[in-house]
Image (cartoon, rainbow, N blue to C red; front, top):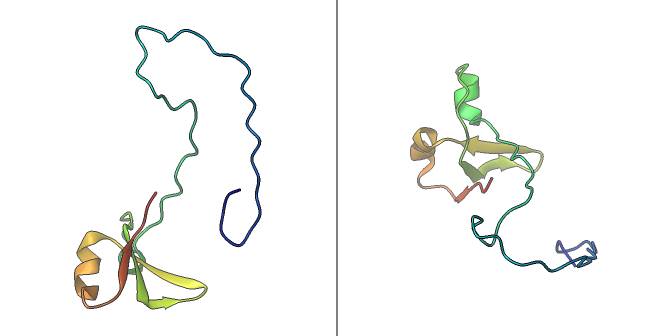
Length: 86
Protein backbone atom coordinates (compact mmCIF):
# COMPACT_ATOMS: atom_id res chain seq x y z
CA UNK A 1 0.00 0.00 0.00
CA UNK A 2 1.37 3.38 -1.00
CA UNK A 3 0.37 7.02 -0.29
CA UNK A 4 -1.40 8.23 2.82
CA UNK A 5 -5.09 8.90 2.30
CA UNK A 6 -5.27 6.82 -0.88
CA UNK A 7 -5.21 3.08 -1.26
CA UNK A 8 -2.80 2.14 -4.01
CA UNK A 9 -1.57 -1.44 -4.04
CA UNK A 10 1.39 -2.80 -5.96
CA UNK A 11 1.79 -6.47 -6.75
CA UNK A 12 5.34 -7.60 -7.46
CA UNK A 13 5.99 -10.92 -9.13
CA UNK A 14 9.41 -12.58 -8.91
CA UNK A 15 10.06 -14.27 -12.25
CA UNK A 16 13.60 -15.56 -11.78
CA UNK A 17 16.66 -15.53 -9.55
CA UNK A 18 19.99 -15.55 -11.34
CA UNK A 19 23.64 -15.50 -10.39
CA UNK A 20 25.12 -12.05 -9.75
CA UNK A 21 27.13 -10.57 -12.62
CA UNK A 22 30.77 -9.76 -11.82
CA UNK A 23 30.84 -6.33 -13.51
CA UNK A 24 27.56 -5.01 -12.04
CA UNK A 25 27.14 -3.00 -8.82
CA UNK A 26 24.24 -4.14 -6.63
CA UNK A 27 21.62 -3.06 -5.76
CA UNK A 28 20.98 -1.41 -9.11
CA UNK A 29 18.25 0.85 -10.46
CA UNK A 30 16.68 -0.52 -13.61
CA UNK A 31 14.43 2.44 -14.36
CA UNK A 32 13.44 5.76 -12.85
CA UNK A 33 11.01 8.55 -13.68
CA UNK A 34 12.58 11.83 -14.75
CA UNK A 35 12.09 14.52 -12.10
CA UNK A 36 9.85 17.44 -12.99
CA UNK A 37 12.06 20.35 -12.00
CA UNK A 38 10.33 23.61 -11.04
CA UNK A 39 11.69 27.14 -11.40
CA UNK A 40 12.09 29.74 -8.67
CA UNK A 41 8.97 31.92 -8.47
CA UNK A 42 10.89 35.13 -7.74
CA UNK A 43 13.53 34.57 -10.44
CA UNK A 44 10.74 33.90 -12.96
CA UNK A 45 9.30 37.35 -12.22
CA UNK A 46 12.71 38.78 -13.18
CA UNK A 47 12.76 36.74 -16.41
CA UNK A 48 15.31 34.17 -15.19
CA UNK A 49 15.08 30.39 -15.06
CA UNK A 50 16.62 29.10 -11.85
CA UNK A 51 15.82 25.69 -10.37
CA UNK A 52 13.81 25.95 -7.16
CA UNK A 53 15.02 23.93 -4.20
CA UNK A 54 12.89 25.45 -1.44
CA UNK A 55 9.16 25.84 -0.91
CA UNK A 56 8.04 28.75 1.30
CA UNK A 57 4.91 27.66 3.13
CA UNK A 58 4.57 31.05 4.83
CA UNK A 59 4.08 32.83 1.47
CA UNK A 60 2.30 30.04 -0.44
CA UNK A 61 -1.41 29.86 -1.15
CA UNK A 62 -3.15 26.46 -1.50
CA UNK A 63 -3.09 26.55 -5.33
CA UNK A 64 -0.12 28.90 -5.74
CA UNK A 65 3.11 27.63 -4.15
CA UNK A 66 6.07 29.98 -3.71
CA UNK A 67 9.16 28.06 -4.86
CA UNK A 68 12.63 29.49 -4.27
CA UNK A 69 16.27 29.02 -5.26
CA UNK A 70 19.02 29.30 -2.61
CA UNK A 71 19.62 32.99 -3.31
CA UNK A 72 15.95 34.00 -3.10
CA UNK A 73 15.42 31.80 -0.02
CA UNK A 74 17.78 34.10 1.91
CA UNK A 75 15.04 36.78 1.82
CA UNK A 76 12.66 34.24 3.42
CA UNK A 77 14.96 32.97 6.17
CA UNK A 78 12.45 33.83 8.92
CA UNK A 79 9.69 31.90 7.08
CA UNK A 80 8.82 28.22 7.15
CA UNK A 81 10.87 26.72 4.28
CA UNK A 82 10.99 23.10 3.23
CA UNK A 83 13.48 21.57 0.83
CA UNK A 84 12.03 20.23 -2.43
CA UNK A 85 13.01 16.62 -3.10
CA UNK A 86 13.25 15.90 -6.80
